[in-house]
Structure formats: structure tokens, C-alpha cells
Length: 200
Image (cartoon, rainbow, N blue to C red; front, top):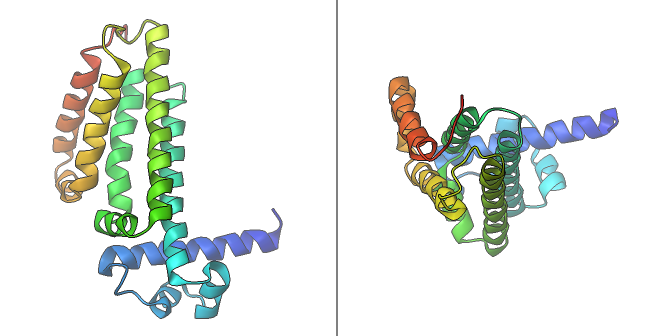
């Protein structure tokens, strides 16, 4: 990537970050292109050059958020970390995704956009497959008890994801009380680790 492409990518990312910040604070409908441009310190023309419209900007933002989340989960589950640390990072990633974005913005956007809705469902399926592969590898290595179905463990993790996605206020609770997060993490681990044959 040459210098021009790097500058172009940096400007595009600054627009996406500015848009997300404003959408989180005021909601998609109330934010104007002029406000996004001002927040990103670019011209409105630049936004139209990069994204064509506010709607396309929103689509690219949602796709980027989902791609980033998928990459994060992939990096966690495919790392060489031991299982308990992977599970801790997985839980933290569920919290962080809510912290980084507005669930109200995401849910409203997905409900009104067939393309984005389909894209997000496809990415969620890929995330589920990553988790399934992680569990299956653990079973092959005789770390995870093979009497517990992979599907049950995947559903258990999805329950936590659903809770964090639909209760963004929990992030404030964790921020004000780190001990509470550790308690939830402990319960999360016990729900899974109690089914593990850990030799750690």
C-alpha cells in the first residue's frame, strides 16, 4: 500500500469512527452528513466520494463492525492460549462489542436493511462455526469432555452473547464494579470448565 492509499484509508476510517460516535450518541436518523464531516474533520464532498450516501456509509460501518468482531473471535479461538484464557477473552470480547457500538443503532439498522441483516447472519454463523471447531479440537485433544455435545456448548456461549447484546447497560455496571465482571466471568467459566478435563 503506497502513501496515497494509506492516507485515503486513514481518512475513510476517521469518517467511520466519527459516524459511529455520532450514531451511538444521537441515533442514525438524527445525524446529518454535515455533522459527520465536522466530527471527522473532512468535507461533506469527501464523505460522498468515499460512501456515495449516508445509507451506504451506515452499511459499510455495520459490515466493518461485524468483520472486526469476527476477526477478534477468530484470533482468540485460533491462538495458542490455554482454554481458560481463551474463554476469558471470549467473554471480554462480548462485552467490548457492546461497549464499542450502540445496540439500538445496530438493531434498528439490521431490522431495516435486508443486505446488512443477511451479512450479519452469515458472519454469526461463521462465528458459531469457529466456536464449534474450537470445542471439537478440545475434544480431540481430550481436554473437553466428549460427553457434552458441541451444540450445547455453542448454545451456552450464544446465550451470553445475546444477553450482552440486548443489555448494553451491563457495560456501565462492569465499568463501575470490576469485581462484578470477575464474578460473571467465574460463572461463565464454571458453566464451561466444569465440563472440561483440565490439567492446568
